[in-house]
Length: 489
Image 1 (cartoon, one colour):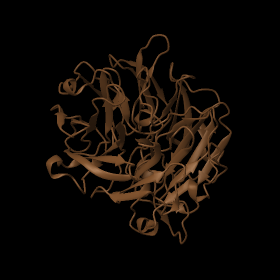
Image 2 (image 1 turned 180 degrees about the horizontal axis):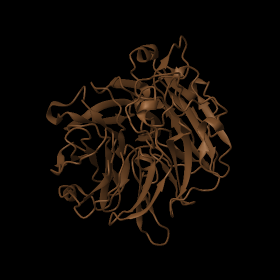
Image 3 (image 1 turned 90 degrees about the vertical axis):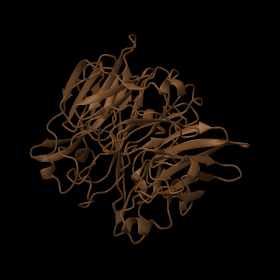
Image 4 (image 1 turned 135 degrees about the vertical axis):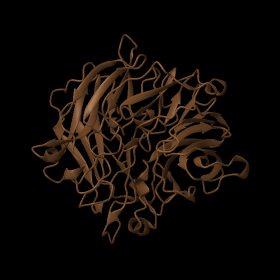
């Protein structure tokens, strides 16, 4: 395959449970497939009914949080360390049991919204979820910072031991790309990825689509950070907006792009793109997909790339079908052949599954006869006996042909991104979501039939839209402005 990554890449196959064996959470939604799937042996259906806010856990800091926190285990001690990055360009490490602060690192002054041409985050600092290299004890992140009265994007490597900046970092993106990158017009919303000894960082524009921004993916060698590879959309726009950012099946990298401007011919927008580690532009039809109505999606700002491309493996009678699930702001969901994305109009199947603008990240888990995908949103085809509003579960099947149907819908008020836990990779699937910027409560549902399991009464102040939970062996965590909430069971 032209875009296959190096055989030694640190890949994560979708058919393997996304959680680490030691319950570390090293990247967005737990793994590079962005499936949001965690193995929590003690969280059964019965115990989920007892989910409650842990009153003893209340880390405190100053700052706004959009990025998902990460959870790292100190080698030798097993101590859990929560890492939280803020829009004030500060990174904190907290003890995952007590909430006590371990270290803090300031990266510089964040970018005031007043100096940006548009946007809805002010100040602007760290927005995309960082990624951890566990073997090296390093965390990578992008920070928007003010330098000499001008915005810059700088990619950092910090030691997990004490937050110190690793030698050779940070890397100024505009300098690394030789001036092709305009920091004031670019924003970094999507999660970073670590693969084949490189860190990959996606970029979009700001809310409002102002200026001549482009979608970028920047790849830096972790050993030689000044060695930069990059991809840039040919047309203006085409930002990589989805929280999941760059995803991977362990062989290839995938990015989903949004609307472009002024493109008379398809020029990388409204697409799922496959890359190798060199980020060479995908030109063959097997390496990209765009809907036939991409011009209409451009015209009405209905980004296909509202969510990240999600690899999933679906077992069937003849083996395993390797797919990509993608859904954008139009509410139309697509299933793609992962080995041949199909070019313009090349989806295996598609279906309108929501009536709202779909932006929140999905969660994926395996089930007998196929797979489930949970989405925040208003279902277009909720079963009358399993109806609700705010959460949708789709059943994906590949026999006799790839197909999607709505299995159940649940009642949630808000805009969180769901995750799913199982006790062993398959049993007792539980879908968990916070009603961010809505009721601001935790909600838990059975994954098999959608029956509500728990909704603790506490309101979680300071949640931002599309925020997602992470799960460890005995707690769930969700970050908010000035704190991290923990739920026990």
